[in-house]
Length: 314
Image (cartoon, rainbow, N blue to C red; front, top):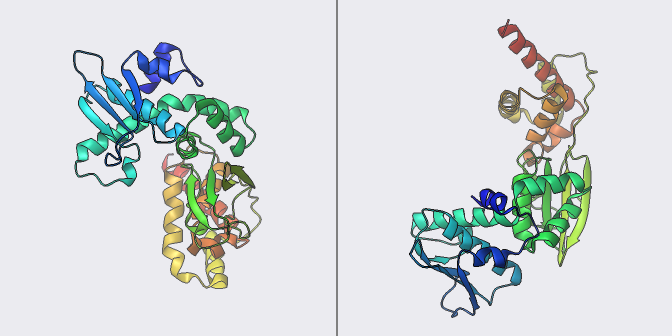
């Protein structure tokens, strides 16, 4: 719905949100009573007269902007009616009523897509040479908070990236990952400034946003040259014997074909890269994936699966 609205109005960031909302509602900024822990209120949705939006002026500027877009979402989404008291951080708040929570989530999604359209982020990503530059561009153009920008960026871009907000002592404060990036278990309980967190990362970047330090890992295509003559079963047995991780045999053998079956359309090298990343970031596989023969295991197994599939189709 947000995308349709932007296309209909021929808008893309940066645009005047206040002017856009004024076409749909009257807006007033005021300090809410302390007992009312809300970001905004929209009154008269679906009524005969123009709805009224009240925004809590005691919240930060970035939050007020997101809240205004959130309230517009309540007005635009057809099944949102009446008076709605909004909490934009509804994910972290306990609500008794499921329907209310769902409406808040829908309005949040609308706000994120309105302020940071996915096609605009994807286009911007192609023009940026680093994650830090992309985030700063989104922040400069939209005026949203760091957290809102990071969440939307990592929901949108296809590049395999993990990003961590790092504390003063190198500890993990929060992490974000794109859907094709490795899991992030390995980030916990270590100094991220000093420790190696991912085996398959092709580059790293450390940058600051305001008073926060972030570290990101980018995962490019892994080039594997088949050099080991042994069969994949023998290679895996050798890896398990040398690492003492025989108890992981079943899970290792389960992850690879599962990842293969959902990515059959990819090239052989892309498949191997995806599969390697499927093990990376999970602490229990650190020694396995770090073993020099592990890429050979992956490559040989992928070749065998492709050969079997081709044989079954003839």
